[in-house]
Image (cartoon, rainbow, N blue to C red; front, top):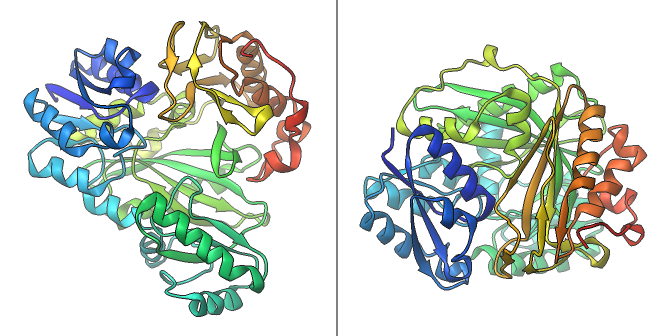
Length: 456
């Protein structure tokens, strides 16, 4: 097992990794920016080291500072968490070059799946269903027009290096194509340093269903069932649940087999997630693979009884998974709500500030992953996630009831949060019936009617 591990991240995921390391007997090193000097992960780690000013580019994305800290403090592994450098193949390669284990997949797998056009081609060759679209990046408007004519409108323009909804545009007519290409390309260049685009048929009102996989260095790959992540806004997930409501076990097994094929096709190791779009006729298509731990991993942990982060670390050491596909059992139902410091009544405006009161919920079947405490000041430089509330129930109805109870108990004062939004979603009749899709929030939720909550 590793002796000392550095967490190249912040917030709740840094806290989550520290807890896993404590249970494995691994000493931890927290790195932090000036803005995070009083952060919980800094207080919890065995050692902590400042790596730069508040701006992420000068701290959490500063590879030279992180690597010099790792070498100075003698760590033998780095866990990147999610976001920041987690899916940066160059960072993984540098770790490899200096004999520090990167707790994640090899750089080659990250690079393949980091380029959405290349990933699409690799998946198609592996027999994983993909959405009809361009065979690779489109070089100009003429090629884009040919693809659109072939698959039919509406189409979606996507950045090859994209993620998080950036560099994406839905196009309904030929007349709108040129502007969409220009806008998406400019946005992609600004966000990812690459303006490369590809096109896909736009699947209307799809569900976003993903499969958690684990792969060791001995060619063993398993999946841990599926999660529904359809409740989202501007391609940002807000609520996740497992298993997906209204989906037959046979369908989940088919998704799982496709996800395992995807992992084998790129010689994947570590934890990862293969994401699919599911259309109204029940056909599924590969969308992308996240080559890292995900924000929503706790819902899978709750229904399978696995510790994905500990398994991820053990696999990085070189241990076998120790569990077979037949050992994986889905028990009950779990839901995760992301509680952000945002005001849903004002277009989810980020709301940094000082948390005057923070009383998380508890009781049977309730888990809260957070880095926040009373008196904590939320910096304006990073994402606005305050906590993840996860509830488990014997069935979906009980998980929803527990989530509603937990959110009603959750007291956060000093900043507005998304708790009122989640309460409205949980009470929505369509949601309770499991009728969810990626534009659910736009179609079914009246944000202007949100009631006040203790968090405001």
